[in-house]
Length: 83
Image (cartoon, rainbow, N blue to C red; front, side, top):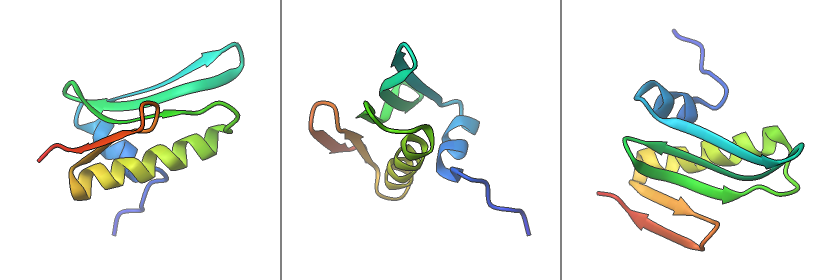
């Protein structure tokens, strides 16, 4: 049985050709997003969050996208179904 990867849902989207971006101001991450084939999966404001917290949240939202078809934009307070 294959071992489950940490942040499996992010890995699944990247394997499909997706891109993960964590933008920063100096040493501090300020915004992060995950997209695949030009479709936003999620975007969130990450000021004050540590790397593992950011990755956990993105993975949670990637799972929601995969299972429910819901893209989440926490920066602009929006979510929508892509199916």
